[in-house]
Length: 276
Image (cartoon, rainbow, N blue to C red; front, side, top):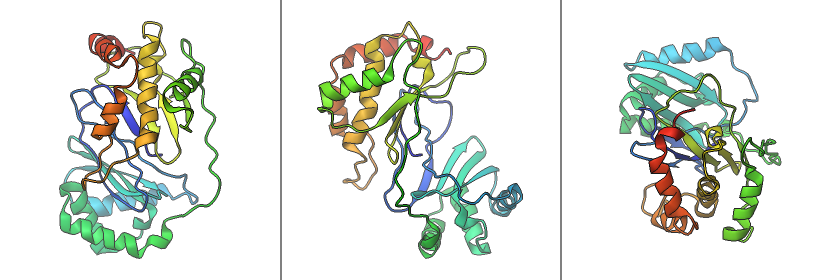
């Protein structure tokens, strides 16, 4: 699923590149200091592809680029190619239309992944257009997953309902819940994605690290408020760039009653937040 994310400093990485198709559901986040990573919108594959097929695709593309390559095959309706680089490693999500792509397209993929080559990008966009019939359109009703809302310290549904009524006149329609359970022994992290909002599925997820007794209620509320604002503002492309936090968004964010207090608390407690 595509997400808009709100995070503390992110562990060393670069912002993903992507080639998209039709309503482009992408991601952004509120970040502190470092640029943001992204998660990716995808649908469950109707056909399961053999690992041998995916491994072969990795080898074919790797022949035209330098660096380690890891590929995930998706049935994504919007983000057809997405590239994330961490050091010398490229994590790539590709629509399954590329599994049997001809040599010229494979070569263009290698150049696009490694160098963001503009000419290769044009070749790939043309290939995507010519294979648009493979991009699944669905008219089925989407049933959002059941989300766990009651944590050890906070009830997210109560927080969401209260904020929706107070700030949005109950016009926001989203599902909210806690993210996955924390695993392993507590340790210091360089980052935490405090909240995410899925553009396609209208799902808000709040990180479990925020469900701790030293975290004030107003801080959790500020994170939930931030994610709800994304549904109100969407993605601003009026300037030719994709802005996830345009000036209007940032101004509205300050309407939260405890905006300055929550920002100050975040700065003063960042080390505690990143230990989980």
